[in-house]
Amino acid sequence: MRDPRRFTGAERAEIWDRVAGGESIPRIAASFDRYPGAVRSLLLQSGGVRPGIRTRSGRALSMDDREEISRGLAAGESRRVIATRLGRAPSTVSREVKRNGGRSQYRAQAADRRALRKARRPKASKLAQYPRLRRVVEQKTRTQMVTPTDLAVVG
Image (cartoon, rainbow, N blue to C red; front, top):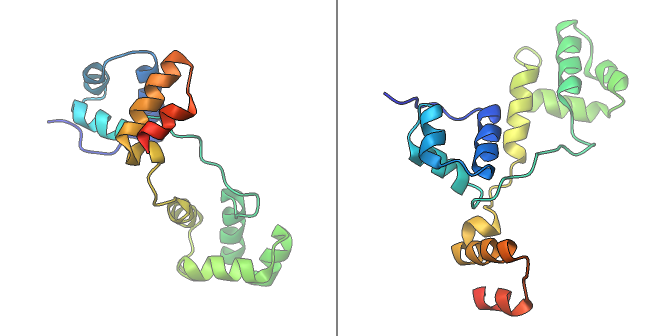
């Protein structure tokens, strides 16, 4: 029986590295004890183009900030005291705690996972949405020459 779980971040990175190195999808899939379709699905999620590394805005709460909030709540500190220590507005800490279960249920890791999930754009990339565009881009990047006429053909 093949492994039904999702690929971890490290596994995804390894798959992209191996594809870039020219290894076949069936061979990659076998090394992870998965079906080739699972690897293909992963690659097609971003239109066959390796997705960029996700980064957070400097304004967003970090995992360290969330850990500090969690420790402060466990110690019985007020949201205002926690906010002052973080250099944030009290309303920021209050909203963060409220949207993640309140004072008694706040967990930093769960809050961080939720924030990352909510920050994702639901929109697929242009190359994922338009297979003809993807084929033109792939073809032209191999030849290193794209003209405006090439892109007009896709539209």
